[in-house]
Length: 136
Image 1 (tube, rainbow, N blue to C red):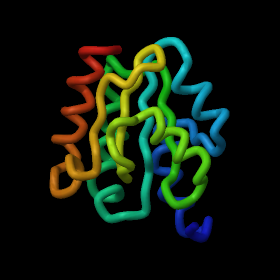
Image 2 (cartoon, rainbow, N blue to C red; image 1 turned 180 degrees about the vertical axis):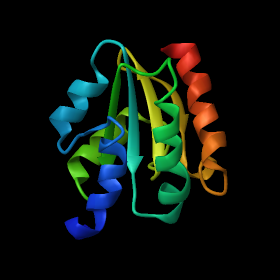
Image 3 (cartoon, rainbow, N blue to C red; image 1 turned 135 degrees about the vertical axis):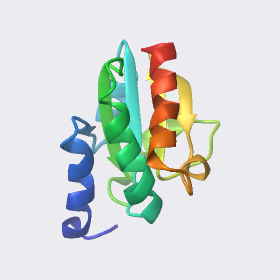
């Protein structure tokens, strides 16, 4: 676990963009299993989260067509919430940062860490927008 003062600004990057932070398993379950579309961002302290993932998520959700719900869990902080979110992302292995789009409780699109590292934020945002066009 990381000190809260360290992750607070990283949390705020997403919550200030309209993401709801989920901190327990029940909140994750309720969000993902809800009707409609849900984007789950697994946030992280790593450099690729700062340079690529969070900027991409913030840019993508500005698009006119976007998920009904925007939620986030923080790897290395709320273990129960993160583990629950990752269980819904199976068979994909645990990855942080990562982004997953669910429709009516079913995983329909995922972006794993290896698809985030070394890629410009706009390329990742475009990937999300493409998924939003298909599923939202």
